[in-house]
Amino acid sequence: MCVCLFQYMSGFGNEFSSEDPRCPGSLPEGQNNPQVSPYGLYAEQLSGSAFTCPRPANKRSWLYRILPSVKHKPFTSVPCGDLTENWNEVEPDPNQLRWLPFTIPKATEKKVDFVAGLHTVCGAGDAKSRNGIGVHPAFLFKFSFLCVSLCLFVCAVPQQGEILITTEFGKMMVEPNEICVIQQGMCFSVDVFGETRGYILEVYGAHFELPDLGPIGANGLANPRDFLCPVAWYEDRKVPTGYTVINKYQGKLFACQQDFSPFNVVAWHGNYTPYKYNLKNFMVINCVAFDHADPSIFTVLTAKSTRPGVAIADFVIFPPRWGVADHTFRPPYYHRNCMSEFMGLIKGHYEAKEEGFQPGGASLHSIMTPHGPDVDCFEKNSTAELKPERVAEGTMAFMFESSFSMAVTKWGLHTCQKLDKNYYQCWEPLRSHFNPNWKPGKQ
Ligand SMILES: O=C(O)Cc1cc(O)ccc1O
Ligand SMILES: [Fe+2]
Image (cartoon, rainbow, N blue to C red; front, side, top):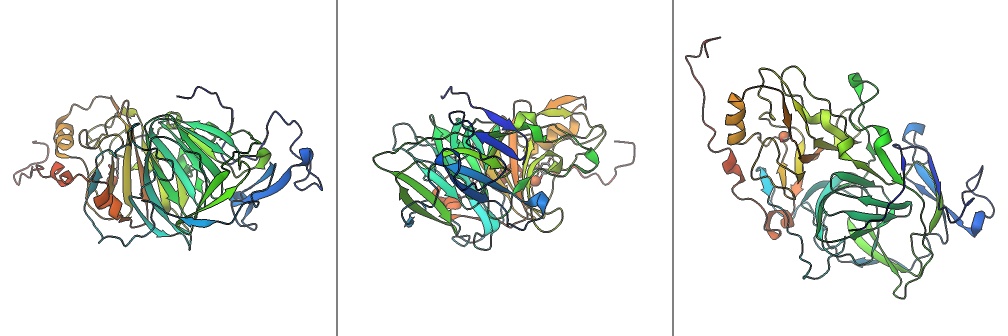
């Protein structure tokens, strides 16, 4: 475990600025492109939105670096392993799907780095038209140096083991129950300190935003001040083997070599940055009268589509909270959804399925596929005394909810060998309680 302490700046989408303290004055004052930048640095812009995007959606950062990113040898294609964007590998499967915890390679086995540790389980859409998503459970043991520059927006959810993410903007230590977002084009590397597992959501063409709060008011859910962005940190070193930068481009991986560290940014400013967020800071809104509120009240981040209110992907959590609803079946309801629901469990037990859905595992309930509480949950909660009680204590389940109809990959259905073939059986014992002689007020 790494005990280094890192510094962060707080806020969501702020205009941040940061200088590595070893080089005071490295950020040019009053302009972005001085004829000669302080300390002889190169100025480089990273655009996260079209130049012409309206101001609230306009994102870019200026990086002042020892050498510019352009100084690299040509990219060549490298194997993608289990990372895919081929959504036609297997026949569509509309069933409720559940996976047992994905296996993490053991310390004795060969090292698995971040890229080799990614396995696409489901997704949809197309990176070329920049409309779609991919879900990649990640499990790896040891890190070998790699830099990854991705053409997408990545939301990483570590489930076991902390991950040290070095980016062009600085370093972030992200532990389970925290999430981090790396944005399109940002170069980063991942260090792990033992057996590590997590979930990655890749969004091809939209930024994650905080959801609107509507009638909730100005505060609540994920508050902007709880998002943390790294501070500038650079290294000026060469390694005999050179550096490999892996680029995910149009759904495929490419590698290039360069003889200097890509983490050579001495100072930067802008509103396009990586960030992390601790889920314990989520200010939970919940029903205090009756009925079960839709899980959209637990949305941490949303990547909006162009249709109002319809997300390419929402990142939703099921945090510890009080359940107090009167005369109500309190757990999730039975439902069929026009959205796809991919769920994972960071820790604890999920309220609708105390057993079977395990930390490090996953489930997928596709568009209009019926799902809901298992039989134990239904029977228990139909007769439970409705006193105020803590729900999901010590638990953190999450959902990637998407308007895309997701395809499951060959890896997800077969190769991983983690598909729980008996999942449907958790609803089999549900029996009819129908009583045709039922009279109002007599039950
Ligand atoms: O299916 C699930 O378990 C997720 C979910 C939870 C909830 O409280 C309401 C709807 C929903 O899809
Ligand atoms: Fe659901």
